[in-house]
Image (cartoon, rainbow, N blue to C red; front, side, top):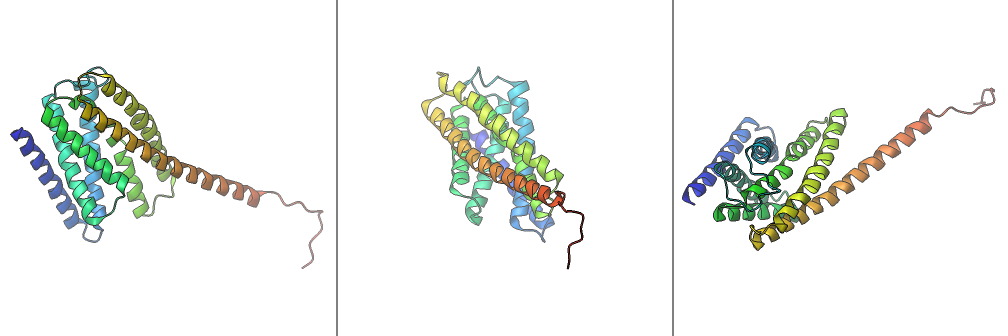
Length: 244
């Protein structure tokens, strides 16, 4: 357990160092800009690593829930745990996130600590990390596009589409399969199963917010389209000039 604690501590120090470097290089920007740069970097790295573990290195999470942790799974979760500790501390200090996001971070930290301490069930937790973090780079891209004034563009539309699509297909759909495999397997302890179900409920809470966002955006697009049609509609006249 001591090597894992050292690895998590080193991960936390690395993320703090990267954040400090971003702050120094972006003094004209806000602290949130630097934090989101770190979040974007973490999202890309951890999505690639957790995806490799889930699909190539194995074992397969839907059939081997509760299996012993592999060394690569331990490295990935230690890296992610260090980041989540950093991000939770940042959010609490600057008070930028709501209760739902703070609860999500707390559950994630507790779940990873439990899995690393028990020495098993990293297979399904790593899969949860993958389906959760794959949309993170797109979420950060939306924020950066808004900050630089490029959100109302084709690129903004593409980012929004893939964010909503991947969230619903992987985080909600794929997450449901992972939760089912975890709950029905006799290997994971009941506390980990309860934590997994709580994480999925949090994802459903995020889904409600995303669906509301998508509904507002579609209504706005529809109203803009109908308004444009009315403006471009041909004016019916009898051929005579109107007196002024």
